[in-house]
Length: 294
Image 1: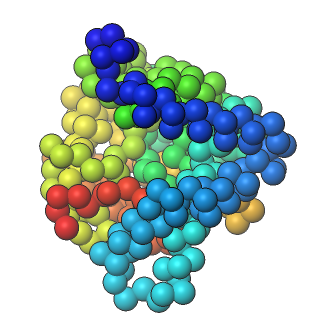
Image 2: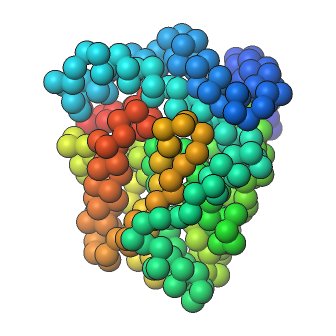
């Protein structure tokens, strides 16, 4: 399809992308320690009210934790988009971001299994969610010599997607777009003993109806299905933002035991859900996670 005929490259998306580029260009001129919190502030106090993100946070919280105190709801309606804004500019910050995700040693009960798979050349599916910074674990592992690729979902805005993919490529490659275009390369990478990073906490219309945070959510089974087919370990891993707002604890959890794809994916949902309840302000409550099930 020619770009002129591709709805992802519409004039409206082009104008939207010009604004993104202007904001990113201004922020990237600032020192890292100022750029990250400022990006969080702009998204929380300017973009979120205009885009309706704060309302979406409130609606999702009302669905999952209806008895939550209004003071805490108001705090989360600002802190959640603040974390999203920090995450966005971090992904465009290349070396600065990598330096911050490698300041702390890796931790968690799955480190031994991860290292053993790395030494043996066994494939690994590294599963995370839109929590903290969802690319922190990929960045931290690549910086330490692990061969980690990433599966990503192309953005609806093609203009934005082009420079977003270029930015996250600076953290590490290979990257595989979700869908037929990236499938063959992704499978070759897994078969060669690579580690593939995936996020599974977005609404998938053709997904399985599983529980997430106590409510039915349509969830992709792809991580478990790939692992079973290619004898890969499935290991949840997370980049938990530290209180300073800049550094991370990169946690590697124990591998998910083999079972049916539904059982394995439910275990992944439970793993992420536990962390979300412990750090409510770090999950992307702006997503329409329960669309079609609530």
